[in-house]
Image (cartoon, rainbow, N blue to C red):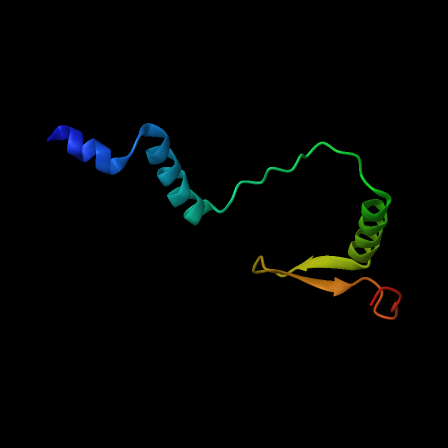
Length: 80
């Protein structure tokens, strides 16, 4: 009687995989890439470009606490 119920559920590894599958539906797949690696030349140039783009904007805060972004130099069209 009890053995029939456990046979329907599968062994421990199958139950574990089924539970992890349900978690992946909620959390998404695990990231398996390494965080420790050398930057490629392409990534370095992309990072430099992104840094230049962020330097052309400034964030202003309104009295109510909200913020908005405006160009530091409205005449500068170099990166737009």
